[in-house]
Length: 314
Image (cartoon, rainbow, N blue to C red; front, side, top):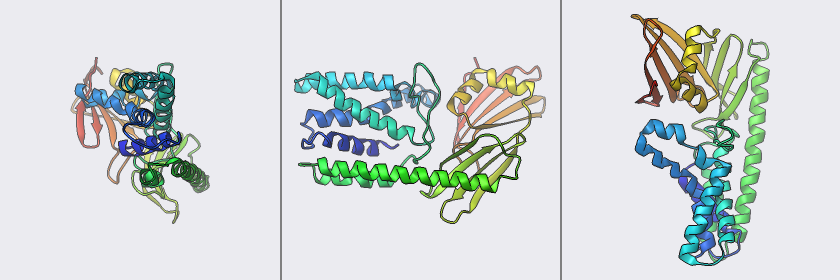
């Protein structure tokens, strides 16, 4: 979720205290800082874009990370405002948990259980930016002297909206099950908010012989950008590719991927595609591993949309 929406909902969290919203109110500061602090992992961009991809929504977006960030925020606010550390910690933690919940609800996922598990958990309900969430909490800004009621309405509206999104996704899943019931697709299915359009849902169907991806419009029930990709048995080269450092990183990044391989001019190529995010022409996240004639890994690249990022093959 975008930083502005996180900050707005952090204000909504602080408004539940019943105190006026103000930069001189330590509880407001604690909640808002808690709501935006997990995205401090953007600092990993200093080590390169691949380091950011590897670490984004990792430790700082985990339950352990929320506790540590909230404690640090509480100490900083205590040094500035004085008073009791405990309320500052609790309001900062409430803000951080709101951040974690929002990021969990979109398809990118968060490592909530780090360091015990690096698996990305996702609720697949929200897009990266959802204008309705911003609208729900906008009244809080205009009632800053007595914002509690506006905040309660904002959270109530958010709850009903999320429930509606959940019901919509269930309906889309039923439609897909009905449409593909005679197909060989009997494996995993994932339905996720599309990159564009609040009523559009991307889907991924995994079968024994093929993967199917596409976008379903909930209003007109039409499917667009549908692609069927042959799903062949893993070859020794693909198994080897998945055991390399770049292969392990990509599989940690997403559990929904498609793999192809081919040979060209004595080189062996293995391409991995993240099936969660796509536009009309290609998938946003891809990896390419290049092996020599002896099947030794020579080069590896990560593609983020049109950006080519070299990967460490060690």
